[in-house]
Image 1 (tube, rainbow, N blue to C red):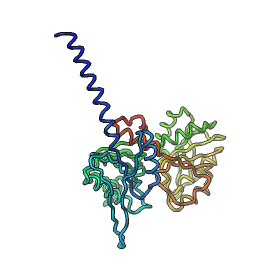
Image 2: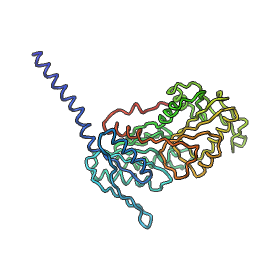
Image 3: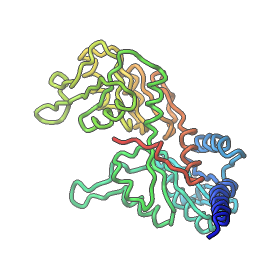
Length: 349
């Protein structure tokens, strides 16, 4: 066969490959839509702002009508056509907002009925993450129930952030998992503290600290081993120990969430008893119970750093620093929308 013909045929194929790889992204970017419930509207607005920078044009939230009737039932309505659009439904699913899960179901189903091309559920905080398994007879796995409802809405995929048990991500048909823990690691690197020891609050979280040690290059790590009294009702601080040297060191203790801060306070007391110079707690999700703020104020922690995945209305004490994840989440949405890899945002524990 003529070599000149083969050469031009190869150029022709290469041209169509290049054009084919570029044109879907260009057309998809015009069809992206963000929609949200009432649990954390301010965060979604910040995500839209950051996403606009990446895409090159203003991304606005799809207007919705979400109001309760007088009898307490919820009325949800999508007020804009999303036919043929790539929709991202962003919602922090949390117990503080009783309707957050129901709002998400309604928004997902309404967008599917409106013939959205693709819909992705984006959950900065996923509810019921600790109710993921059956430990006693006739116990409900609430996370499985919530996941089944979302799957039944025919959502194409979900985006999850630092879930308590990574295996439960498979409750969803198609899922992407990324880690906002990276923001806490970046905060540690930015501050460049000296004499740092990375700490795990218990033996079960040791893998997390080992992974952070590899990512930061900080080799000194420790683990708080809590010993309970003979009745197993409370922790015996005198008998508890720290596996590692923290005397005169600046300790950074990492966790995936903070709830009551009760057991964390005990771990901090044990670290202080073993001579820690300063203690910084870094946790992703501020899943604060009513007594959490008081426990944080009264604890020996010098600072508590959290990511803004769950809004909290209490007055933020000086000890608490909140990191905005909007740019990170916008990057995840941009990569999914343009069919790019999310592997750079993964962490291996």
